[in-house]
Length: 184
Image (cartoon, rainbow, N blue to C red; front, side):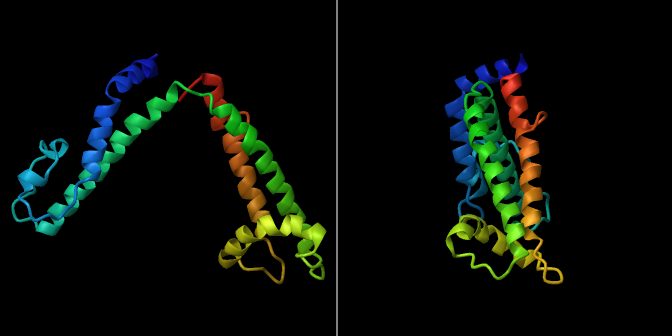
């Protein structure tokens, strides 16, 4: 497979690519040293800025190029390195599946509790659902205030959790596909 060939290429040059990534990340622009000294070898082949370009524009272009090269190098290292080892998928699914299910139930319980505002959410049976969900709901209420006295933020979180559960763990979910195919 093409991924295996790429993986063998990456394994041999992992430390070289890591050094290139560190060199790109270490670029500090603007600098007082001449551009020929400050430019890392990966940027040396890039043509100089156009005549008449401002130094700030040239520096911004070099920063963007350095960032793009660093991101490309990181992707070349990270994705193929994870392609061969899919042992992490099973435990990840084993943790995420019950976590998503428990939080969905907690948010549904919070929806029912919002219909009865007289209950103290710090009392025992109710705090089991209130304490883990309140930080998320508080942040969401800043974006989506209650409508006509009805708090819809627990339903928003149920939808978000259901979406991520389906995208990651469903029959055509990303983690399921990675587990079946044996890699990226």
